[in-house]
Image (cartoon, rainbow, N blue to C red; front, side, top):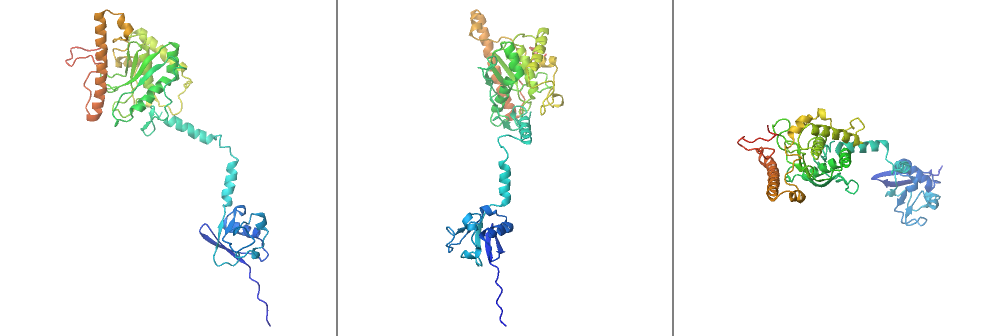
Amino acid sequence: AWQPRAAMAPTVRVTYRGAVHVVSLPETATVRDLGLVLETATGASVSTQKILGLKHATNVRAGTLCPGRGDDALLVVTEVTGLCDSTKPLMLMGTPSAAIAAMASASLVDHRVRGFEEEALRERRRRKGHVSRGPVGQNHAGKANTRDDPGAPSTSQHPYTFSEYKPLPVPSFIKPPASAALAMLHRLARDPGILGIMEKHKWKVPLLAEMPPEGKVGVSESCVLGYNVNAGKEIHLRLRTDDLKGFRVYQRVKETLIHELTHNVFGPHDNNFKNFCSQLTREAREFDWKLPGARRLGDVDAASSDEETWSEDEAMAATRGSSGNSVGGGDLELKKLDPKQAAGAAAAKRASDAAEREMAAAAGEAVAFGTANTVCACGSCGTDGMVECGVCE
């Protein structure tokens, strides 16, 4: 006897993200049911699904079926022309449910407020780069890093500070460059301890400059770390290491700066000088709010550094013998002198400037040709050994 053939369940073929998916549905299934099945098969959220390519279906808009849209969701799948039993898969578009969940979770976070982990990471980066900015102007890789230089302190907020800053004009192939040295000079001027003692003692220094490395630290008999011109008209500091490939430890340079500021009041390295230098060192520490008594994380430990650690007497012996002494001065000083004395003072000033230029040239030649500077650090000693300065004795 003849029996009717069992009705086959309608099937829908779609392609999603490069893969073909075939799903079977009951004859009475709605488009909403189709969307749920496709979400299980593909991961695409029902609310974002779009089935494209139904150009012959008259009951959907623009040939696009949206299972999450109200009027489309109520349609029966078998009533949509070209949806079921198509030999060519239809294109399915949609956002994965997992991505939507992640976006919803992220929307609950106030991204304007940094979390503890992010803030800790930012703080580590600040400290690392920017006493590995170590000396200022160098990052942890030893490369120049001047973009974080806030510049010199504002003279309107801090009237007692330095007026001008002058790095050594090194050749372009020397690293760190002059811009990094300028950043270090700015950092010294901004140091709370330096700002504090300069304001307390009402000191205005027209120029803070970098000087060429003279002699090897802890090795050479003459090794100049800094000098003061005309009791505070200019202060010159040695920033670079012996090989000109980096900067000296910041704390050592700061100690030299305090030493040279002492020459604003006392020229000779006598007991008055020593007592006042010790006083300024204590005051600088008291003014430095960054030093509550414990070393900050990330700071270079001077005791473990491969740089020099000098006693007060050694530092005094290493500085230029002319620190704090007049070498010409400005017009007001010259006006107080008779013509013969004024001419002598002007000649001394010109000699000092010439010696400075010679030192800068010698530093460049040492790097370019690998030769050492044979000129005495003080610029006063003769090559015949008949004249010796206080530093070279």
